[in-house]
Image 1 (spheres, rainbow, N blue to C red):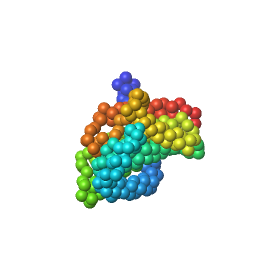
Image 2: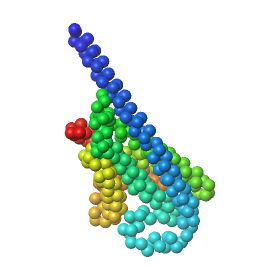
Image 3: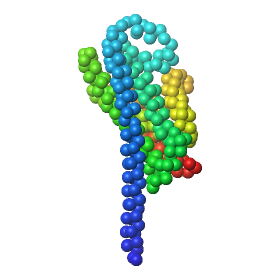
Image 4: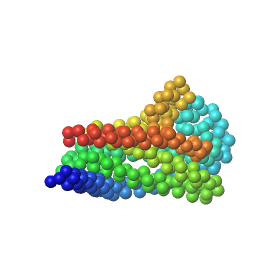
Length: 284
């Protein structure tokens, strides 16, 4: 057989292998995505109601001088910790919503879910059953990671709709562009935490243990970034993903940190590659 024919056969075989791996990752994604639909619907409903509450009470709070006076009396560290710098505006009030719901709540949920999707399967021996099929470990890992886009995308569509419609109803409309920008930029932020959770799930076999560790990292990242602002140790905040995604700044000033967004995507890619390497080499 000629070299050209041999090369053609090799190319076809490689293409077939890539197609099988892609199909396998797609199958894992479809299965995991379907499993997440019900929980995603519940979380979307809870966050939607929580957002509606902030929209309802926001205009009443911004009109009160007592709240502003109370915030001014707080220590700077406390003000920074809870993001109360812009509490006098409707956008600043919503910054509180995102500080709790997005920076801690949703990122914690995503990281916890990512960690449990791998570590839980390893603990229950479900991973052995899955890998008994003709499927690569990389496909399994990528499928599980991609399935996290279901809650990430759904929540980043539902919540801004609730907020914008609600702001129009209370006659204090938000900037549609700023709101959309905020939620688009939150996707790299959440993907970064998803990658961190996935990595912990590969390293730690216990599903709940890996999930708790992921939650601890999320809370620690939020706490460090909040506490060190304005101090001599502000440089420590560079290690926290919260440094590179600031919802209040986007809503209040319309400021966008594209470099920070690119860094979050780069970190997510690096951690995902590290997860794949560790997963390929691990003894299941």
